[in-house]
Length: 158
Image 1 (tube, rainbow, N blue to C red):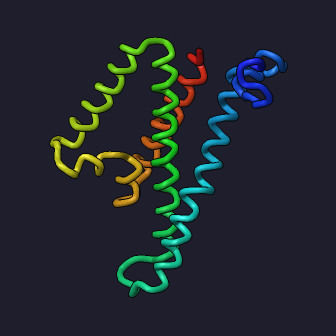
Image 2: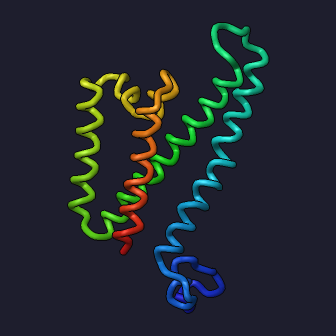
């Protein structure tokens, strides 16, 4: 790989030359992505929302609790998506057919939970449901949808 890419430093190749496991590198990559995209995408959006709240007439909502709920909701949504992508890439590394089956099963479950094919499908996602009506169940389900695929990706890393 050094001959192919020259001076480019490849993190994935580090496990071959350093006393670091591939799982450790993968876990750090996952953590780095969460931090990196949180700072680049989630924080600017929430900051802009917080600034915009100053110009919106106060209704029946608390601006500070809405901003914190938005921050948590966006973070959960992002981490659910990231863990799903890492899980699917791990499954794809083992078998392309199984990854297609996982995509089909996830699509079926999402449509089955929502009950129809219209725009309400997104409301069945636990992180968005948490924003619309906060509950411990939605928060717990979001945590499961983050931790289980991430843990399976680390265990079955290829």
